[in-house]
View (cartoon, rainbow, N blue to C red):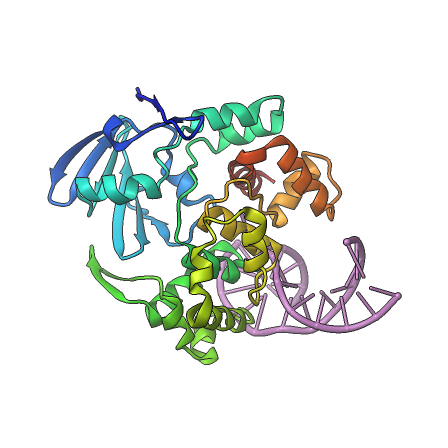
Amino acid sequence: MLFKKKTSNENITAITPEHLTITEEGERRIRVSGIDHFDLRHTFDCGQCFRWNRVPADGSYTGVVDDKIINISQKFDGSFVFDNCTPDEFRDFWFDYLDLGRDYGTIIETLNRDDDVMKTATGYGSGIRLLRQDMWETLISFIISQNSNIPRIKKSIEALCKISGRPLGKYKGDEYYAFPSPERISGLTIEDLDSCGLGYRSRYILDTAKTVAEDVSIELNRMRDVPLKEAEEYITSLNGVGPKVANCFLLFGAWHYEAFPIDVWMKRIMTELYGFRENDLKGMQKYAADHFGKYSGFAQQYLFFYARENL
DNA sequence: TTCCAGGTACCCC
DNA sequence: GGGGTACATGGA
């Protein structure tokens, strides 16, 4: 059972690390109980992130975030074991990264109101949490994602990290690399990028890295603080960033939860289950704004996951 | 082999 | 502003 408390600045119940039970199980290994609305597969395989991988042997997930490598497993009693993680690291970093402070129960309840499609989708994707990801990594990852598929996207990103990311050392026998900074990527050649299987996206990535590294990294860092429209205008000015990539960046990297990215899968569910014309992107965006509002990003993620596995 | 993938830039009207 | 098309490449 979760304990919840009201915060003064946000009209929603919030949870803090103190509401969870954290016990040490060994060196850099902890068990956390009391986490609600969290499912590893639904969260890490719902298309929002590309550097988390399921370990086939035990169903746990290993991920690289910033300069940290971690393995998380979900236990039958509802607790989670974080390997390669201290209690302080959990409280200071992973708690926020995994968005554990948010009350998803309220969000789901609101979205489900008078919407049978959402009821199905939130039931199917129960336990999805929107990760609070890095802006730069999100931007480049979703430029890479365009007109590609998830296995290939993951492969390209790993290749990019391997040729230009900082080595982070070994974990369980494998070497891991950080996601490369704008400066590191801007130092690469088109041929380097081509070797990662990026195809025509190599040009976009190099251009964007140079732009951000040279003079506007300060601009990029403002994107969480300015209104969505202003952030969208700036981010779409980068080469290779159109409305879809921009919306993914805004949602997953800049934490603008009213963003509603529409890709082929979202078009599919919006036409088949909400009755829109296939090219009526404007109508779909307006529907999201009107019906899902500040929770549009959450709605999108439930719908996307449902569509990908069922349509 | 062919089709398709978390689209965008560019061109035309 | 809406509608076509080329773009690189690997996964299924």
